[in-house]
Image 1 (cartoon, one colour):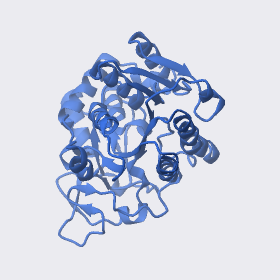
Image 2 (tube, rainbow, N blue to C red; image 1 turned 60 degrees about the vertical axis):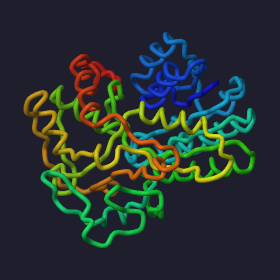
Image 3 (cartoon, rainbow, N blue to C red; image 1 turned 180 degrees about the horizontal axis):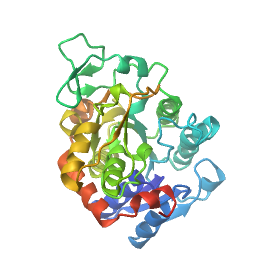
Image 4 (cartoon, rainbow, N blue to C red; image 1 turned 180 degrees about the vertical axis):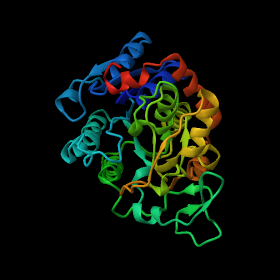
Length: 358
């Protein structure tokens, strides 16, 4: 099987490439990356050493895709992953749309040209912000927990956020680009008769993740705690009670393999995937874990509110479990062990990810 990964030198793309290469006999793995992110050159070298072909190009440029070889499957893991993208002064709104929507369009044209299957890695942040902020919460130790004793909106349960939850605006500029990409990808599949799968991913976490907040809060927090970087609990009273779930890219890779092997021509094509309630943790709980591993390092409380921050995001993967028998196999405790070991072995990692020397 020939698999092509856009954004192959990022954490998600690189992790998927390595898993496919080792777990799928006879697989031919290649991909493209513009190498714009600090640290991506490091991944390029290690991938090439494993026999994975990396093309230097940009998915925003159609001409960079014209000469690429025919493949069986395309995985779109190329995106600006920050919910603040386009409004934070680090990238423009036009750049965000060009990266996340136009890039997907160009990859879909690539799939159409060769009749390749297409898998889009979407995001948990396509869900509507106001109703998520309004969810009833209760305190469970030092973490927010869903108060299931109160009325809940459609698409919300103790299992997390399901696919039926509202995607009405506002969802952030970032979320809107991923939501639009989902619609375009599915329409291309229907119009031009090639298989398309859409996976709305929760937080991916593991060793080697670029340690920036927007690209992986669990990894960043652990690396920053060990390096004694300043940390802040922002919003929600400045206590760090906001909760996210996490899952390992190897678990995502297993799902993608199941989707590539699926021969069904019809049925549901869109799935939430994440760690779920059993793999969820608040920032305060993560800090306590880091304190036990690395010694105390207290974040600064900051009660200022930001429009895109949410108290609780936990993904309900029931649909993926029912359709493919898929569930996460890597517990959060093991993922944190992996990140901690990497942080100890690579004290320079944050500086590398920030593209500077300390």
